[in-house]
Image (cartoon, rainbow, N blue to C red; front, side, top):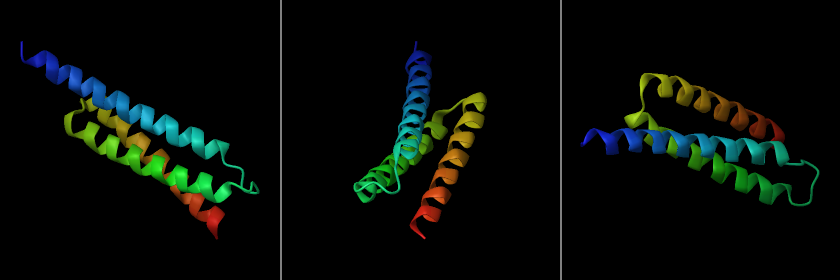
Length: 90
């Protein structure tokens, strides 16, 4: 009976990481560089990216092998977002 909560926690952790990734990507695609609120949007995006990274790290602690592959891809996608944002700021 103790295996169910572990499996459920694994799935919940993965879903939280996936949601965090989706939130970060959505914000990234919404940012308009010339917008008067660009600075605010960028700050919000950075917070979302940091939160997504934390959720991914948490999920990796309990993830199945299949989930780890997807979580690694999420980290790579976040790194691409960070690189793009850094290019915006230069």
